Image (cartoon, rainbow, N blue to C red; front, side, top):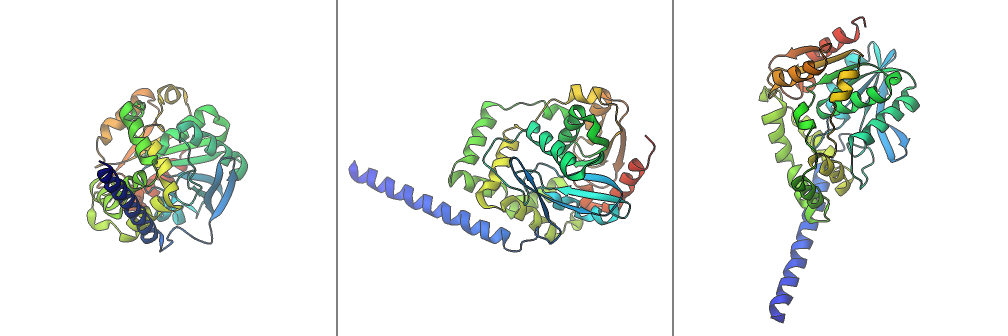
Length: 318
């Protein structure tokens, strides 16, 4: 019996060491190119950590907020930024736990991000701003506007999350999955599988792009790097996202907001028409437009068309 226990103990140690080495190698391989680094990067010293952002152009401010999916960061707006800076001052932020911003071991919630965006507008932008969001981050803008209407002007949501999914609260299953991912070594290994280059490539081909020929290897590498920069700490925001801790019921806020809100949908996005119909059901004043032959990331797949739609909404009289 003692001999078997000794062998099991040795095997456990060897497995742990092997997983640790694999984790370190994966980290090195995915971050070696430093795609996300740049001289234009600035940092906002927020109360929960340093927030990376960029600011370019002059004019009325626009704040761009990336999605909350694995590998998301301000990088996803790089193909529309230059065009927008011709007429506006453009701020692109990496949310806490994403990209090059600090990634701390806490539970990330919608309320946390609402506080971040509100503080960022007050302390960095310094004036009422338009906001453009991608995917799940639409809820951050909606709740920030509902809580602090003096900070936000118009809001544009690119493929906002399904309202029914936003109503899903953490379950026993998602709580366990969150705890698993946050475990040392084994959890990091699981996270690395979820955010490997292969997994992110699959997300691009199956969910993000309609035309697979338009997918750029540089975009996949940037997403992979963002998912692993700052080592294993990258997993905490995603564990909260998978655990549904960033979900929030927005119905009350959506009904009460009388600001200008616009939705830009990838026409081929899953359930795109059902999703927009739900938003309109709770606020009929929302304007909606579709971009054909795009899915979840039209701003990477057809950036010129996205910019045209943004210009149409921003220049529209309130």
